[in-house]
Length: 421
Ligand SMILES: Cc1cc2nc3c(=O)[nH]c(=O)nc-3n(C[C@H](O)[C@H](O)[C@H](O)COP(=O)(O)OP(=O)(O)OC[C@H]3O[C@@H](n4cnc5c(N)ncnc54)[C@H](O)[C@@H]3O)c2cc1C
Image (cartoon, rainbow, N blue to C red; front, side, top):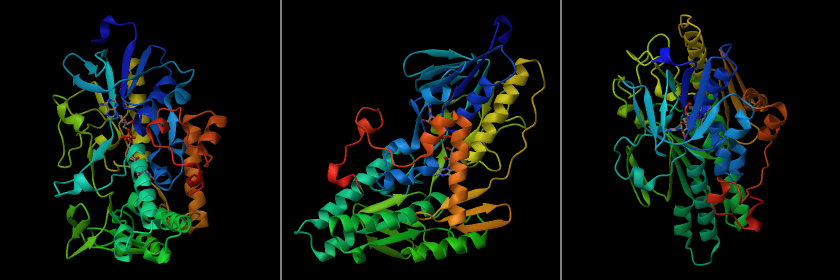
């Protein structure tokens, strides 16, 4: 209980979009009576909206910001640990390290994980697109395929199969990735002296059109752009099953060694292990009007894990994180929490280099200007979590893969002559 403490202990678990926003807001709170701890299972923050850059050969450092840079000089304890249990009864969480963390208020910002919906073969044979590690694995696979095709022994028929790339899921991340791959695969073809016309990129969507959550006019413009880039679009084609070198969607099958699954996410399964939480049909935690888990006055749930109207977006997670932090700061000062007002999102999707599609309310902006809006949104975000100089550094593309950092160190370094790709 808080009564025997001099300070109110605020525990934030997860340092993604929601957790970072919550922790930064808490550090700036008016109340000096807060003791803030942020626990993350990795030492850096991953900027998912730019993950496609890692797939297309850019350094993971372009999407990775050390937590030490974000929280340098802040009154917060940042702990690298993975939370394995959380007991609302004793108000304690425990980590893989064996350490226990007591709290008066907890913010759970655990994000989501890939959902495979029990589709046969999907987990085993597809490539995920949800972390730097997955993006790097895919990038290395693409390089290996082209290298293979460049070798003299590969038949024309084999090359057609090797250079058939399938993306399943035409939401914003599938569309973004398809657009970026279209340019990058041509670069690889030129580099490895493989005929460009052997490359096929198919984008499969189970719904009746691409970008099903966005207005139809947006989907039409995105389709036109993707087709101009050489991407084949198939709608009403839910995935049925996948084998090592073959994919089956409704009504057709195709030979391929590259299936990228972007069509399913579900809330972090850790939420299911917490006693006393209740869930909606999609496995998201039901929250009250203050973003607290239903019937759990000391646990706030934010971002992808919370059943709120616009969940599943970074901008919602950031908004939630700030709202939950403000409420904890108010509660610590003996004030009533503020009711949560869901905020409709805006969208800005890059589709191929220098081209973007921005949806601001009812206005749709496409082309170079749409792309600039997206870049401005990236910069604005970095400025919100970092001092100006560091934000500009994080924003600037063209970083080198380095052997010494914990991210790049785990990734096989591409040979010198390949670095230009
Ligand atoms: C490829 C891709 C592109 C996207 N593009 C956009 C976009 O352009 N615009 C947009 O609005 N949204 C986008 N999104 C969605 C957006 O990234 C998510 O909605 C957002 O990350 C959710 O924030 P979060 O804080 O809930 O979770 P996350 O940002 O995923 O953070 C969760 C954090 O918790 C940590 N964690 C998990 N379990 C534990 C544990 N047990 N102990 C300690 N730490 C733990 C994780 O490592 C992670 O750091 C994209 C997502 C992807 C995958």
